[in-house]
Image 1 (cartoon, rainbow, N blue to C red):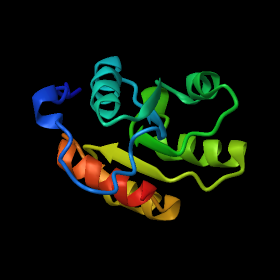
Image 2: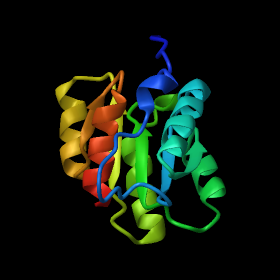
Image 3: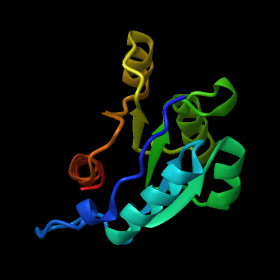
Image 4: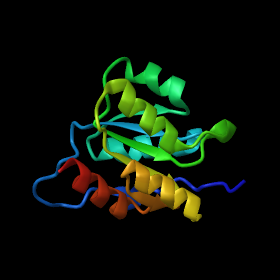
Length: 142
């Protein structure tokens, strides 16, 4: 099992720019590793996002408390063989909304890529660079 190293916060300083769509946006971060959830919460929080974190579908539904997120950031491989794409699909059905999603993975298999195409979600490879993450989020929420 690979241990992902959390992003150093100093790399995550917001870049000056106009029309920042991130402050105030409600994002769900789904990952089975609490250390990654913590570093993503810190990073996205610096960018002004409201961050809801969860390790699986049940905790996501509980944490969201009936309010759909504006975007889902999901790890591809969750615990117990669950794939992040499945949880994204379920949440979209649950809230009856085509919630934008980004899948984060170290998996570079064709099977992974195919399931992402069906989901219509961009893929970010681990380790995620803050600048790349910010660009993708800004594009999806812009």
